[in-house]
Image (cartoon, rainbow, N blue to C red; front, side, top):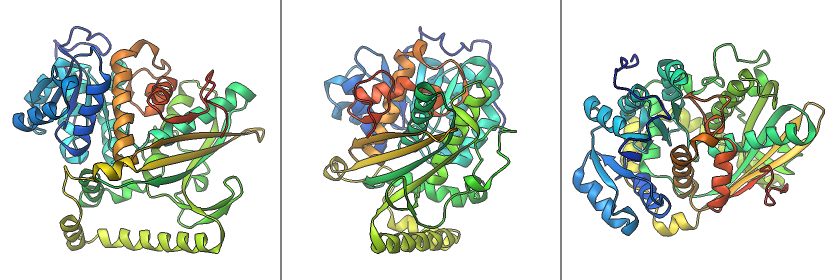
Length: 430
């Protein structure tokens, strides 16, 4: 789909202070959308914001359930395939926060409207083939207009992207070394909501699996390194000296690594010295110590391969849809409260210096943490536009390129553990 035509009434991004709403949450009655509304009800302060979606009654119910902090929030009714309604929504907002997936199915018209009206945009997608299509359609115009279109602002892929950015810049700031590589190890506890599972199945149903597997899917043209072997997705577990134990392929790696590589390529092209030529990033799942951990990693690798083959069959995808939670459903409040995640990072400089980093938090990573990530990203756009990084001021961006240290500090203030952060006494190596 081509980008929508320019409109004479469109305002440039950053110049829309007179718009009716500072933030509009689209998909506000969905599982993550309801949590996003609750977060803004507690943290939006005097900002003007609204709930948006396809059902007036459901939106009003969510607003009521979120208490006094949401009482003044507006209601905007707009269906995902109603381009005029979405254009009207975008024209009223400075920032749109979308939780309405699968994004390849429901997201195009909303992003089209945001680009046309110079409205900043964040979402929680992990659908990288769809993000690639956004880049092809919209990056050039959004960059020229200073509009920040920032997908992947949930657990896909803030810990990976922001963590790698912080480690690389700590190497340059403290040691004067460009970062050659970063690797991350994840440990997590949490559940999955129906919308996330529907998005994953949608990759297969759209025939996007080959694109999904491309390690450089999101990289700018001409930014693919000559040595591609260092960047291929790992398939087998291994023992790693830096992490002191067994690590295995991380199921979110095929999403997060593409985002981190795009960040490095965009920033290097803009003159950022923190990334060495051929910068490499990989991520892993923490397995533990000893033979049992190695065996568990091998079993997980086999299971992932079997699942991949199985989901290529339409009949098995249909069965999976009957077994998984429906969109709008997810873990219980108690289960989400008991969740947690930990992303440990090791960065290596051009002269061999090692810097370690950490992004960690309490609460279900795919739901609780995702809500904090995307809401704080939207709040950064709405309240700290002048403080955001200026090296890549617009386009289809990544969390690191769009927000950088601003988001790191917001997440620290929200209770997450993030290290290293420049000039903060909480930033010592873990």
